Length: 93
Image (tube, rainbow, N blue to C red; front, side, top):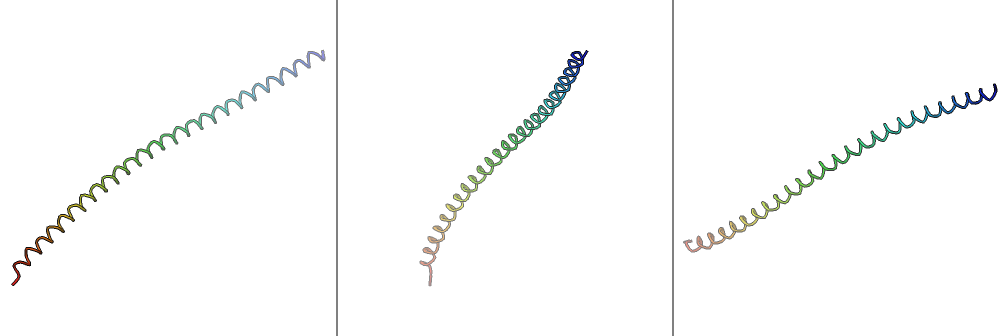
C-alpha cells in the first residue's frame, strides 16, 4: 500500500506543479500582452511626434521663404527710396 500512497502523493505534487506552471504562464502572457500594448502606444506616439516635427519643419521653411520675400521687398523699397531722394535733390531750391 505504501507504493500506491507514493504514487498518489507524486500525482498530487505534479498536479500542483502543473497548476503553478499554468498560473505562472498566464501571468507571463498577461505581462507580455501589457508590454506589447505599451510598445504599440509608444510606436503610435513616435509616429505622431514625427508627423508633428515634419509639420514644424515645413512651417519653418515657409517662414524662411516669407522672410526672404520680405527681405527682397525691403531691398526694393530701399532702392526706390534712394532713387526718390536722388530725384528730390534735383528739385531743391
